[in-house]
Image (cartoon, one colour):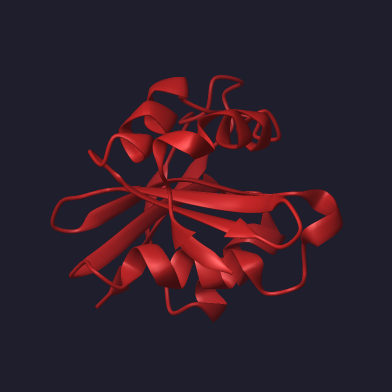
Length: 132
């Protein structure tokens, strides 16, 4: 089940956020406080979440799915759920992460800008764009 995040989801979101290489703790606050678009996937327990920052286009700021729950459609469902209320969506991923790039392309994202040295370790990023 995919649903909107609430203040009661904060602890679960923070636990899932720890799976990410790069995260912003304030995004959880924004998603739980309705300043951002937050969605959580729950099976028996929370298995993933997505947070998008409203704008034109909106920005998919974080997407996390537990490793044991991957390849079951939760990432796709989470991206679709945050994309539903917006007029376009952008996402950023590591340029050398072929699996992530393929994931986003399968969801209708096109590769946009190259972002040299975008990540803290000097790795390049890619900005991907999806039209509504």
